[in-house]
Image 1 (spheres, helix red, strand yellow):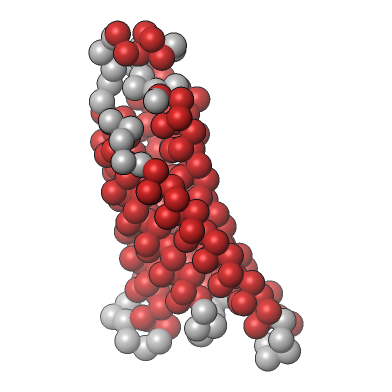
Image 2 (cartoon, rainbow, N blue to C red):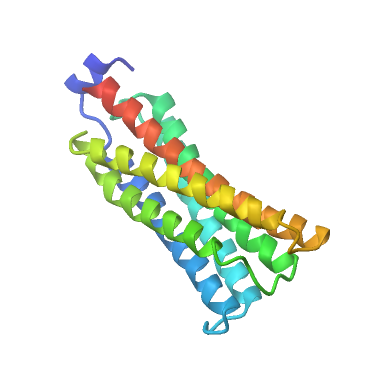
Length: 213
């Protein structure tokens, strides 16, 4: 659909609501990650198994939101911006949730009882990125005031990279046995993938804004 036609024809504004809903699922996912830390520190009210089930449910809801976006694209004649970009943004958002769910599931399946303290920093980055992304989605309607969003997400991703490198150095410092290193690295890698996926979302938003400007 050409940009000119989309501006002359009424488009389906439901997409903005669907993207916002999906982004809010990521806020919930990052909250569950923080609850996981509390549980492992002995201050939480749930077991690891309960948190894993809660995250699985959140991931399922995110999948449903993603499918709703795809279904809407396939049934809508005029979309607010390019169909390919709608597909990409929905997929990028869903990738974040998949990575967060994978991290929690690894903790549960490997029966980990403790995580390196730097993991809390990774989760703080994810919580901040999730909040910023949820705030940015409604602004797709006007494509205004989005630059600060993707700039801050890129900064957070750089912070996440620094934390990740410190974590990897710690895991291979000799303080952990080989099997524990493998288990913890699975969790750390998944959290890093979630941070990277947030940057992919921001990059897609930037590309959309440039096209529509």
